Every structure is written in C-alpha cells, then in structure tokens.
Length: 176
Image 1 (tube, one colour):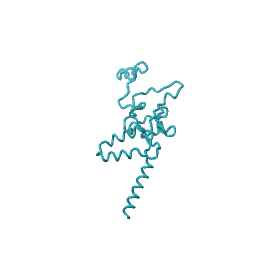
Image 2 (cartoon, helix red, strand yellow; image 1 turned 90 degrees about the vertical axis):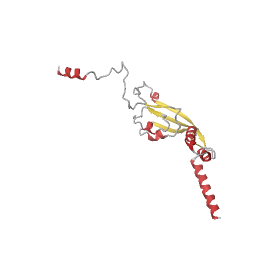
Image 3 (spheres, rainbow, N blue to C red; image 1 turned 60 degrees about the horizontal axis):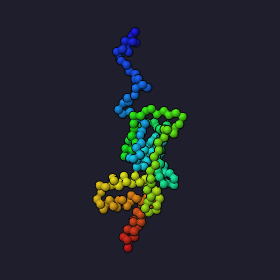
Image 4 (cartoon, rainbow, N blue to C red; image 1 turned 60 degrees about the vertical axis):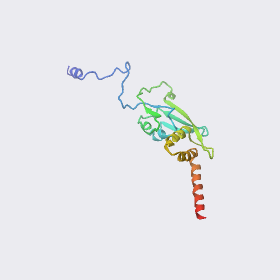
C-alpha cells in the first residue's frame, strides 16, 4: 500500500506512446532533414560529420556533385545543422526510424550540377555554390563585383597560375 500511495501522489508518468503520438522536448535532436533546394554543395556537413553519415563526392567524371546521407550511421550530434550556411540540413523531431528489411530507406541523396572552369574547362564547384557566392558579393562596388565574378568561375589551379603570371609580369616591368 505504501508504493501505491507514492504512485498516487506522483501521478501518471508513462505515456500512451504507440496509441498516442509521443511529444518530444523542444531541442530534441532527431533525424536530420535535407532540403535540396537550399543545398549549395559546399561539403561543410560532410566534413563536420564525425560518423561519416554524410558524404559529398564527385560523380560521373565530375559532371555532378552527389550528396548522400545514411541515417543508419548517424549519431544525431547536430554538427551538420550547425555548419550548414544555407540551412539545407535541419534536425527534426522525427525519431521513429525503423525500416523493414530494406536499409536503402534510411538513405537520402541529392545531386548538384557542377560548374566548369572558364579557363581549363574542368569541373570544380557546384553551380549553386557559385550563385551563392555571387549573391554574397553583391554588396561590393560594381567594378570590384565584376572583377570578383571573373574569379568565381575559375578553378583554384587556374587562379594560382593567373596570379603567378600577374606577379611575374609586374616584376618584369619593374626591373625594366
């Protein structure tokens, strides 16, 4: 009877979960949701993921960038949510992640078209990433904006070669 009195004072603490939806806390870290429309292919989420549940890799002779999330590997740490600059990944309240016999239901994928270098023609970033950078640079003056846009469409190795050429030409002109 003593236990019954204690339970009666405390009240009901269990939930009627399978029959009623379970309400999670406000900052619950559930399954990350991927919003393809916001993704720019920067790969920050893949770099931050400690369990390698997120990968961002080149596909098909660098024609596109493939984003892949494996929920079976995820530890729900929330690092991908923290580092994503465009809010393409957000932690949800979804915690019911069971699947029957088919683990492919735990995998989400997205594909982004790649940008080609205007100098050498090699793929180096996603087109959405270039658009995101152009949008961020829109606060510059028009002259600086046009100069910056030229360099946005050039791969890192071609940029390096251009800078070396510019520096050697300036040094050569200064010596003469």
